[in-house]
Image: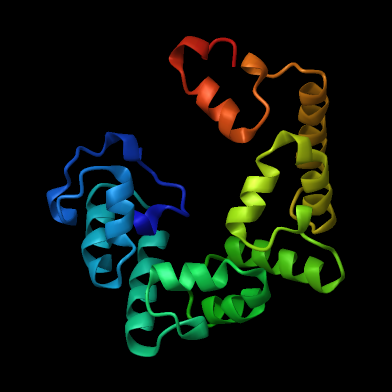
Length: 205
């Protein structure tokens, strides 16, 4: 669960019934994320995710490998568990070191590595991250605001992270946003997700 946060799950976390006895009887998604962010709980969390189809087989294998590697050798910057490794590697100044570690230990898929390497190449060429963001959290927050969508599309396109079709679709969406045509007048990814998450607004969305 905490180890699931960054991956697309194959079954909905909304189907999980709380408390989850297998995961320290965590009583909510946040509690389970926190429980699974602790190194000694990884094995139980991976077993639970596998038994309940919450991760793809490839991702399960990546997590089992990560658990073993961190236990034996530690990770970038001396990190020892998921929480400390994510904190260290979310800083873009550590991107090259973390990518090398992930590549050497088979901890990322080829697709994930390729995308991260595109970001690194873009930064090394002199491009700046949108809004001066410095990690995944601040970049997600900045680009989640639709007022910054054009800038974020520009970076993604320049970094080679978007195909031509994806760029065209994103720019078409930007035109809709600028015309005020969003469902419920939402102005950010978060507010649009919240509005469209309400079944009463499904047809409009």
